Length: 471
Image (cartoon, rainbow, N blue to C red; front, side, top):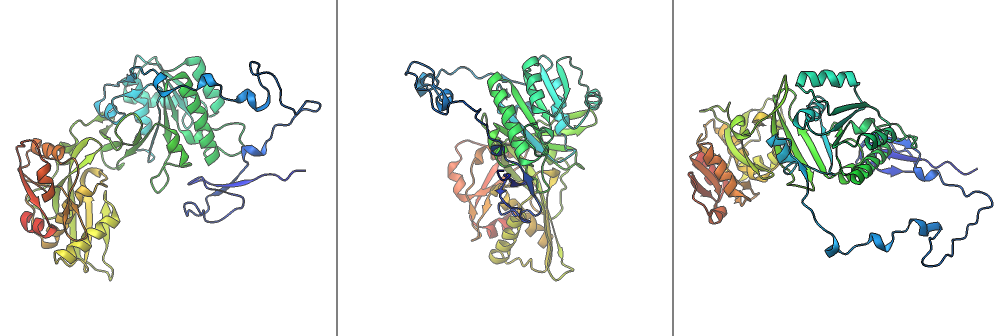
């Protein structure tokens, strides 16, 4: 009897091993290796008496064996022979959503939307029935009953005869329903509940998620409708399942925000049909999600004046400049090791900025706790906001308010220099539109400004110069 083939697959990253291990060598996660039976273990048997020889038919006849599945010359085309037609996009009328999707939902696109539980993923997908009432939408729910989806739709004011509900987790049944209905949009909520019956592993495992996604991707591209997969995230904030899942889809969307805040940010991490890292801002209300067309004004609406530790920065989110308030609080430490806490900003980058302030500007933070917060629940990872974080910390350390009419733009280097940033003109236009009087930018960016702007522009070379200028 042949030995049973077994694999142990990490449920975090998809790493495969032939023996169980407590710690995954791929991602370092503990107790994530789960036993699975690979598909290759099930081999097709050749019936007795059948010939194992390949057919030796002529060149014009059909070939048996491997030749039956070979790609014919008719499937191969020259690049110049491929005809391009205008790509069809479904515009929802929601400016923020269409912006993130690159101008609308591309026909035949395969998208993945992920986020924390309760952030609003299912709400956004249900509201598709209100955005596109003239298009057929098949909503496949694997976590809720059809009655629960109906109750949510009533709360959101969605009442469309073209919104079809299917409570199913078998990917073969879903594919059959898609062929019968022929929808314009397919929504699967969530991909972690979908399974293929020919796999022995449980729904949500790496192999099930990968193979179920592959099946849905195949039928999406063949019938040329648009598909949205709702995905879970891990405790670290990454999409649950194999990493290959993000490579298979056309668009990866993250729904970000704090459940205790009203604002939600839809961010495109990957988009084959538009700009990556584009964001759309929504406000969560009792009646559903409402778009925020001017997020800079919203994020700065509750800004305090005359308070130390507050600055305004401009971050490029895709093609959109967004003005955000940076808040910092520096207090004497009560412990042997001072605390460093950052919300909405990278912790290690904060440590680097504090080290530069201490070394190049003479501000000793070694005996102080430092807290940094990005107001509004926004997450910033662009180096151009470094200058605002540094000045906010220095302002709180000296307990001196900053110039409230200034916006700070620039990357801080280890030598204390202010380094050049990209797309400075859109940032300055956004700051001028919101009434800021002065912008502090890197000195080397002054030569790259080609338009006249209604804002005073000051160039800076070092962090020490900016601290003395703004405080």
